[in-house]
Length: 431
Image (cartoon, rainbow, N blue to C red; front, side):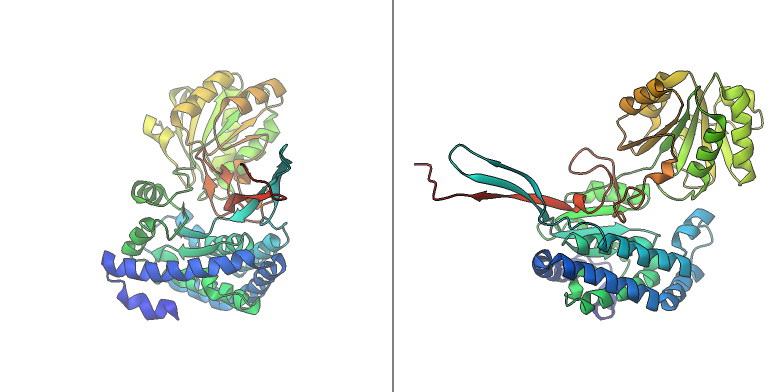
């Protein structure tokens, strides 16, 4: 109802957008206090009921998604269309994700540390919700369900802003989340969605200092850069998923072929996809042609440096900018390197501190690589596409963080809490 009431008000005016955002934020702040005090059982019930509602509304959600797909601009590539598309199987996966989050330990009220002082005071550091979270995401409508689930479970109210391309899908998913909240006796305002894709509303969110406690953008580079540039609210984000898979000279060739194919081609449009292959010169003459063959058979194209093209002359030449590009498509940059240090130097020049992987049988080489990169996630003998909150055992993720404050890597329940100190005495005074 709120969406229908205010959609017509979003004319792009910052004052009107600010008024709308103030109303949403005021409701979110009010209900965040009661949500933080709600029992774990109540919050879990909301997620379980929302999962049931997603299944019950599956046809409705897919039909709404078809409306979004029908008006999608023709210049959007296949990877973008895949991110936007919902099927009954993907709706079921959303429902299972909510149930997975419900089954995780309660992050609220955890005693993180406790100690006693000589004066008899007892200190406890206790996990508490952050408060009100603003989530801005683009084409993947399932992100709204994941974000809502994590926020409900961690006791945070959330204001969601989906991309204009997914507005019908986002509203249909939102209806299921509201069903779950009502069934558990929680206020629907625990999870709210902006009434339109009006960019002025995004601007109002970014300026909502004191009303929103944390902004999490999840989308393309331009969105994240805008958020980081304009926000007056703390931001948890990553700009690019410019991930590398490095195949060391000691790698098992069969493993390298299997892992790289998954890392690049399983889903090319996600931020955990490998965008650059680095391969040791010692094994490149024999292994690189096989890797190219595997990937090309799945529709991948390439941008390669001179050393790689000397081995496989049919590869397209790469510019230096290509190694700075997050393709989010079936395109792979390729470079031949001389050992671990050369691979790390390439990553330092071109990487985005997201996810890196080494394929190696030599544990010393693996250790050198793991310790030599400052990325949020680093892997040994595994696909970069495991950089995902669900795969980490978090149930889901609200995003990936590559900064060095508060949280890094997939952001799950624990990362959506902060803490307070409880000090328990027996009448002590400082005198």
